[in-house]
Image 1 (cartoon, helix red, strand yellow):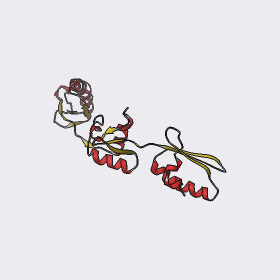
Image 2 (cartoon, one colour):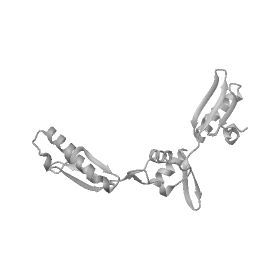
Image 3 (cartoon, rainbow, N blue to C red):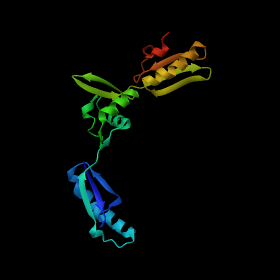
Length: 189
């Protein structure tokens, strides 16, 4: 990845004049846009008489940043694979190339992804989601898109309601609609 930065005649970066090129073949087009569109626009607004032909574009490697939990979740959401190797996560995450392992660990601690080792490689995928449904005197209550940790937390409250006769017909359904209520400790006596 490359960063292209438009510089005014004094060598200062033009506000809004920075672009990222994913591939080297994109550089000439981006450079032309900066010099032919952004430079004249900036020169016209400065009020000091800059000549748009005196602007230049500085090229360099794009600065990378630390990956976040959201970067990891977005990357896994956009994949067609069920499992992805941690060392392959950087592909498709743009500038978020630093500290990927730490972001994966944090995402796992938050319950947003799960991991397992396959053939010696750590693989990750989005954590499955569940639907928690139960009946009360107000009718059927349903919570969707819950992660396992959320089911355990909310489930303790629902189970407490059930013990007092205020909730019944409790069911936890996986993404395929299968009843997996017994897999959660909060619903075990």
